[in-house]
Length: 466
Image 1 (tube, rainbow, N blue to C red):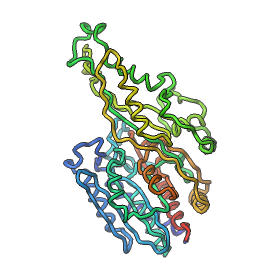
Image 2 (cartoon, rainbow, N blue to C red):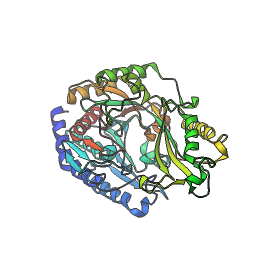
Image 3 (cartoon, one colour):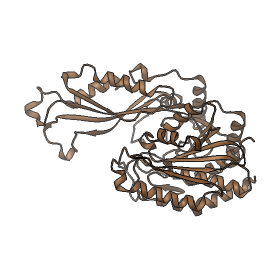
Image 4 (cartoon, helix red, strand yellow):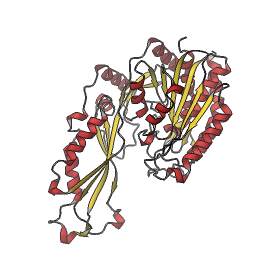
């Protein structure tokens, strides 16, 4: 394989065939089912599926088979089966559903308004992770152009990842024979510490989330008449949250949500902190807001191996403009917990449920609706060939060493594959670097970095041992 030709071919393929399609993809508000209960009637998922199908038909490798399945009441699944010319079975993964709009997009930008500016393509879903399908096929085609003989490759693209992948177990079973026994998994749905070198994700946190509702009245009443007699539903729900979290430090108080952190993960985080010079600047801090810790190592461990709680939504609280002097009948909050990679999500969920329901303050009505839980993932040790290939790829295309990092997000697919294929090797990486802001406003994909990442993936595929 000629490295210079590989890089040039991938660059040209991105410019001619990926960027235009990714731009069209961003325009489609294909929100994941958790955020669009009427997703089937709205038709956005069908529009994305049609866009992907048309693109695949144009660029699928000779001899490959495309499976598109949509089970009853389930989101679609795309499987591209590419026969091998030597031993081995590789599974490549991505998803085409999106997070909701969020507020705070800069002037001229928007979730469904693709804008290319300063080497970045802005818009919802481009980086997380609509590019994965197109980049995966682009990497494979660039190798086939040079006559490289590849092992068997299966590309799996789902449409419910942002909802916790509730449909994935069905499809994993349905396509069990098609997928086969996996030797290497390549996932392009993760992050990067900077845009200057290849980053491998070696751990992912799990997640549980719920809607917690506290009711004190059947309808709102005049606050002047009721306050002092009727307890505030907001104050009561705050008490419940304080059972889970120390509001002064953010420390989670439930022991079952913690785990022992392996020493080698501390060492990797320390190396990452040194590579980034302790830079917390990848977050859009407001004015004088400071991190929870000034120690960069503690900060990296905190966002990858410690449990956290975020309140990500609310109901029952009117806008300030509409907030009259009314003691509200209820407060409802959406709670999102991130779990350490090795904590069992079901044990965590059941424990939190018991803590919240026990002895409600003022005997208020407490109801909890849980979303689909997801386990985290802790990568197995890399084999020598893969460790060498990752390092050589980073040096070849970035002129810098490869780095390992823990990631604070969740990819349910990884935990599922880790259990199903315990002997498999994993390359988990992605384009979600500093300020790319997946799930938030102003999401972007850094195109030069994405091109180099595609070349690196092709390099790793080429180095797969015979």
